[in-house]
Image 1 (cartoon, rainbow, N blue to C red):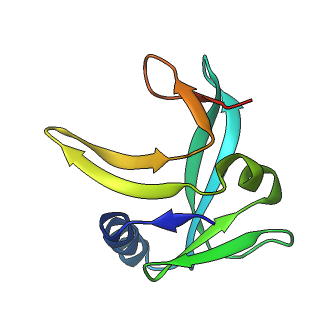
Image 2 (tube, helix red, strand yellow):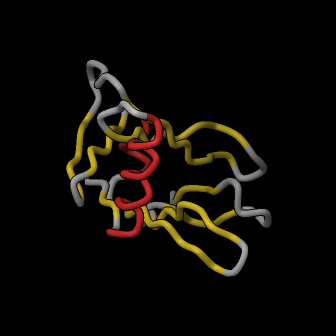
Image 3 (cartoon, one colour):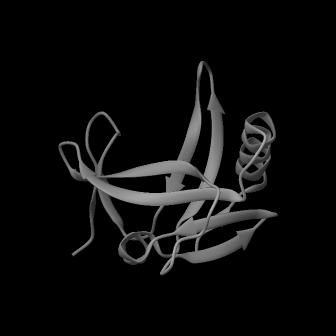
Length: 108
C-alpha cells in the first residue's frame, strides 16, 4: 500500500487543478544516481494494465508492478523547510540515500 499525507494530497490537488486534467499521480522507481534507484512522480491520465491504484486522502496513487515491490508501504509527504520544499518518501524498504539525497539503495 502507498499512502499520502494531508499536506502531500493538498499539493497534488493544486497541481492537478492547475494542470486542468488528470486522475492522480504515478509513483515509479527508476534506475539512476550513485546509489542505484530514484523516485519519479508524474501525473496520470490513464491507468495502464498491470498498474495498482491506491486511494489515499482523496488522491489516486498509481504504481506499476515493477515499482510496487520496491516501494510497498511507502508514505508520500510534502515538506517545506526554509527555502526548500518538495515531496518526501518514507519508504520502509529503503536502506540508505546517497550524499546528495537524489538516489537510494534498498534493503537486502
